[in-house]
Length: 188
Image (tube, rainbow, N blue to C red; front, side, top):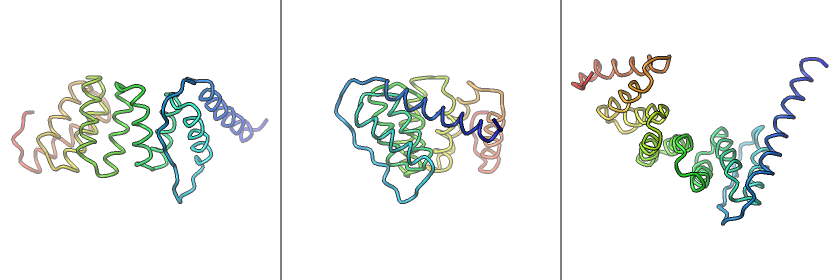
């Protein structure tokens, strides 16, 4: 079997495995939340979106299906639908810092900055070591709300939890530029 056919077989097996896993996951019933991926753009993930939407209609308490649907809508840049799907997943697992953060990013894309901030703060409260929520919080404060002091606070909290790495170096550089560019007298 050549490399091209092997990769195709692996990809098909992966998608089939995900779909089968979703079908056999939690099958308890609860009120459904309508999520539509209706969008004029057609993407390679449309078939998967349709399959996931069918699974959540049939199994509305299937956390994995809601999580996968939300992530697929995130990846398809459908923020309104993603927010709804993340909301349903969060009804099933309200203390999931990753879901809160991803939903917060979608709120940010919609321009709902206050809600994005609430999500990022909640994620950081749920998991004090969840650094992505702190990074995103700093971005919203700096870029969207123009609150340099709160951005600095968020990023300093980020650096306390994650002092090393490429992103940490970028955060330090951004903090340095903010302090220098705006002559902000903030704690170092």
